[in-house]
Length: 273
Image (spheres, rainbow, N blue to C red):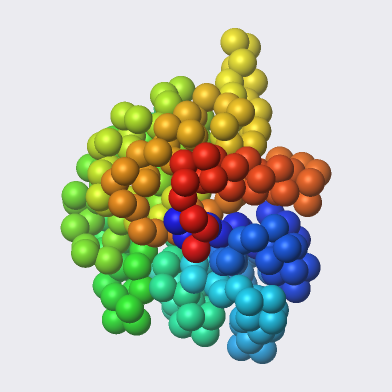
C-alpha cells in the first residue's frame, strides 16, 4: 500500500518533514503548507524546486498536493481568484513537483443548516472546469469529503461525482470527516463511493455524548480503521493513503499516527510502498 503523510503535519519546513518521514518509513509526502502559507500562495518556482529537492534528498517524492482550492463559499469575493490565477498556480505547482494528484474541495456550504447535497449548478461547473484543466496536464482531481463543504458524506459525494462526470475526478475519501459530519463509521460512505475513491486521508476521531470532537490516532476512534484498511486491501486500492494527524504535539502525534497505521498494515500482511 502506498503510504504518505501531509508534510506540514510533521513540519512546515519541507526539509524537516522529509527527514522525519523517511526516518519513520514513509516514502511519500503530500504538500499542503509551506512555512507560513498554504501552497502555492506566495511560492516561487524556486520554492517548488526546494520542496522537490528536500523530498528527493531523503529518497521521497511528492506525488500529491492539497492546496485548498475551492475551500471557500461562493459568495466570498476571492472565489474568482480560485477560478482563475490560484487554480492555474495549483496546476503549475503540481507539474513542477511531479504530483499527479490534486486534492480540492467542493466549495463550502453557506451554513451548517444547508444540506450537503444541495449544491448549486455553479459548484458542478467549477469542478468540471478544474478537472478539464487538470486532464490537460495528466493530473487527477480528488474531491475531499469535509463537514463544512458540499459532499461532506460519502453518499452525497458519490452523487456529486455523478454530476461532475469527469474520468480524472474522483473522491479523496476521509472517513473521519465523514464520521465528523454524520456520526457514521466508514462503511456506508465507503460503499457508496466504491471505485470512485482515488485518494485516502487517514485520521480518526471520537464524538462524546455532549458533542465534543477529538482527533486520535487511527484505530483508537470510531471510524473503524482496521476494517477500513482490510476493505482497501480486499478491494485492491492502488492510490495513496495519506496520514493527516490533526492533533498535537505535532511531531509526537504524527509519529504515533504513523506507527498505528504501519502496525495495522503489518498485521494485515501488507507491505508499504
